[in-house]
Image 1: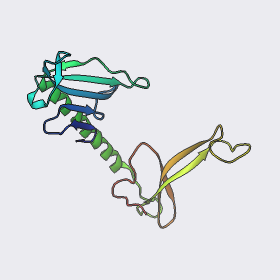
Image 2: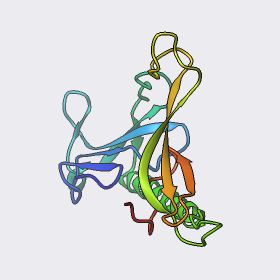
Image 3: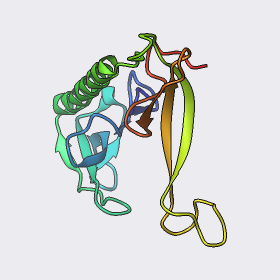
Image 4: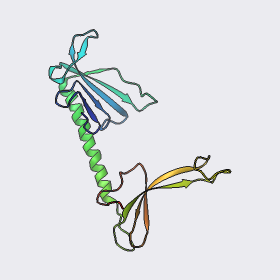
Length: 175
C-alpha cells in the first residue's frame, strides 16, 4: 500500500518493509526501512513490524546513476516510526508551501479584472531554425513547455514554466 511517497509492504497496518521516496532529508533520494528479528543465515531476518525486535534503515543519495545505497543502520522500532513520521511531517510542510504559492499566484487580468482560465500546455521553440528543417530537434533549438492562462474577454495571456507548479492551479478550471 502506498501513502504518497511512502510505500508499505505488504500492508500499512503491519508492514515488513517501508520504502520512502518523499519527505526525506536533504541529499537523500530514497530510504528503506525493514523490520527485523534476530536469527536466520545473515544474523537477522525480515518479519512483520508486530514481531520485530529492531529495524534496518538504508538510504540512497542523489549522486550518480544508482545513487549508491548506504550500509544498513540498526534502529529501534521507536526510531523507525519517528523517521517515518518525520517524512510525513516534511511532506505536509511541502504541501503547505505549494498551497501557499498557488494561492499567491494572481491570475486576474489587469485590464478586464476577470479571472483567466487555463487553456493547456503550449510549446515554444527557442533558438535559431535549422538549415534543412524547422524541427526543434536541430542543434541550438529547444522546445519549452509553458502552461497558459487566457482572459476570455480581451485575450491577454499569462504563462508559467512547466515543472514548478501543478497546473491547472486550484480554483482555475480549464477550458
